[in-house]
Image (cartoon, rainbow, N blue to C red; front, side, top):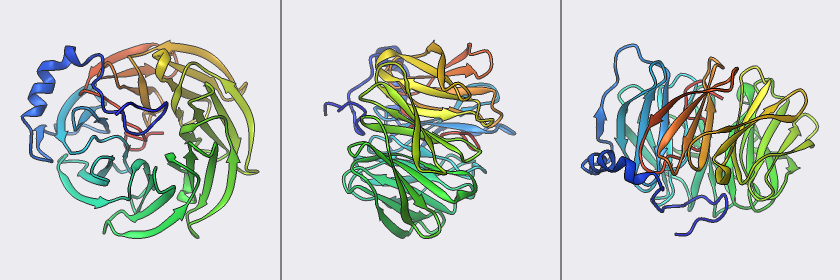
Length: 341
């Protein structure tokens, strides 16, 4: 399938796949869903869970030493990922099989699956793992799932082609980027109703909210910009130019910086939250997609789809500190580190 710009289901192999042929061959031997290569070392936490769409796997990275400690085989081109603050479980969207796989955050084994509509892509989980919110690209809905029983709670109609999802601080609001409506829907977590719709740039995709609950940053893939929103008043307050095809956004825990992946530029734009300007553009891997800030606020993790790796950035000095080989087609769309942002 030929991917649309910022589209949900690109399947072709990454340009860096040849460098990883040995690793890919090893992963191919793990044909049973849920088979784990490697295992959790003692006292290693938190972990980063990186979906590898072309390899049908999830790479588990021990962020303490920057090494892959396990590879979990899943099915059907995993894309989105969400981890609650305690890291007890991991939720992974599988667009081809139209379901979500649930991994144990300590054993890294698949412990459950649940159906998630016609086109599950982005998803988020509240801080306690009680609720999972899954964007259905084709049905234009946000599905609300009980994180323990894995049963449906509700379906909320949002905009067209919902992609990124993020839960705000206090678990009171959910924000959904609607790619084909050029909006963000604001959903009340108590009533499960849309309480606001905020205009964006063209084709909003990934997004993040600061921990102060004041601003949402959303990447607009088709006009190379980031829309910054005042979520108290439901309005955009700035449009910031970035590089080609911005895909996802992560805000530091102190709210002072936002990191934006630019797919076609192989870079990350760094936005200063006070001036609302780009203060640096960093070369990372090929075709960067998912991005998450470590809970300690010191490091930023970027999944690079074409070069099959995660780039680690020092959030203060903005230097690249590590490159970690993962699997073929690393996407990691969502908050893929427990307690991260």
